[in-house]
Amino acid sequence: MEVGSSMRLDELQPGGRALISEVRGKPLFISRVCALGFTPGTEVLMVRNHRRGPLIAYLRDTLVALGRPEAAGVRLLARQQRPVAEERG
Image 1 (cartoon, rainbow, N blue to C red):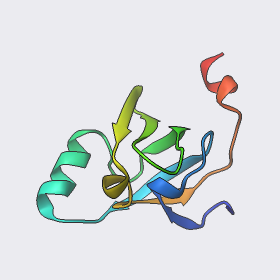
Image 2: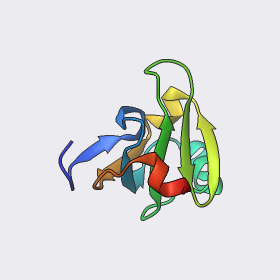
Image 3: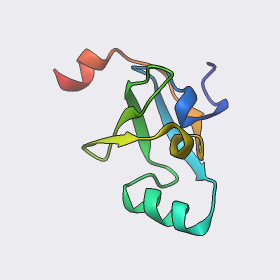
């Protein structure tokens, strides 16, 4: 994916980084994911995304597991990718 292009959180590949651009859905859903830290301008690193089942994202110094339907409501702007090992080392 090109830097600056838009996508959903459930489309982000493992090791991929992106900025949250918006959260879409019903008010209760938006409130819940915002309370988890998924707010516009926050950087997200995808840790696990096997294309089925929940995914695991790293944001705000926290690992968060999120179901695929919920992840589809989080819109992203792509950032340049770096190896995950750089983040932890």
